[in-house]
Length: 422
Ligand SMILES: *Cc1c(COP(=O)(O)O)cnc(C)c1O
Image (cartoon, rainbow, N blue to C red):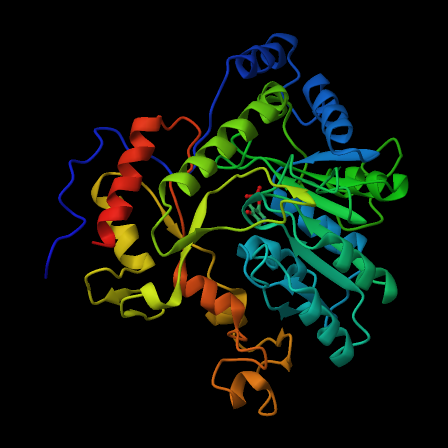
């Protein structure tokens, strides 16, 4: 085997995909919580975090929770999902988008991805409503901080009287036509997991304009206590509230959201500029109507620049070839310099746990024998692969996007990627 891209010295400390960046204010608010003894799920940090988030996103209420996943679970409850109900979900996403629906007994129906923003394809969503007109819930992820086709999807949701749940876990601060993601759905979720654009080390929030919904989430997330002198319970409860210490970290991070987005955008632009001439493109967005938060910089190889790459459920192999490459080779090359990249999210319809669930592309049920997907051997009527998610998964990868990365470090990553195409 020839070694075109593994001849580089590794970084002495690991360059992460995306890691927390602290500023000092977080410490002050944590200390405040300790000094004032508000060491539970009540306190000023929580109140301030909720106020700042609602103000930032432009929604009426934010309820601080223990995780984005908890927010999605309570959103599923607010959407009144019952066992056996089908819900339409983004397909190329983290499984935390869809698992909480299944906690409530839902059967996810996966909607294929479009090439313009790598998000839910509105045309496939319309097909899905033709096949399952009874569906009343849509869960939409804004992948890697890039807003999806919100006008189209909001319109389809309204036409079918469906509740839109926005999974804005990755997209805090991103806007569509000037409005923040997280402000389009009836209920939305954001996350403060350690690798998100801002972090609390963990944590999340549910966003809504509905006062009754916000009240329910506050109640459910604290074990559903009724207003009584003793612990009185009428409903199932959860321990999902954010801690006042975690809220201190989030509170300290919120003022730096804009700065983080600026840094992330710079990283994206530098990749875009310096990868020019290679048979690759960056994760795309609708520059006219949206401004992503650029949480992760990703790229995709052109089909004809792909060397042979084969993936089993848990392993990947490829055959190195001059002037060609593949995500596996590039990820291995990046790892060889002690840096972290990642394949794009493996679509949910390809996951063993969800493999039997319906998967709808723009030609209809992608698993039906009548579908163009089968008839045209993976290519639809417009000549494009009709399993778009599988195609992006095959050709795409996430690049080191840490906003503490130096320009020199990024240039070395770029050099290694270039070498993969020698
Ligand atoms: C991170 C993430 C979540 C879950 O957030 P947690 O706070 O880790 O529970 C949900 N959906 C997507 C798309 C995410 O990236």
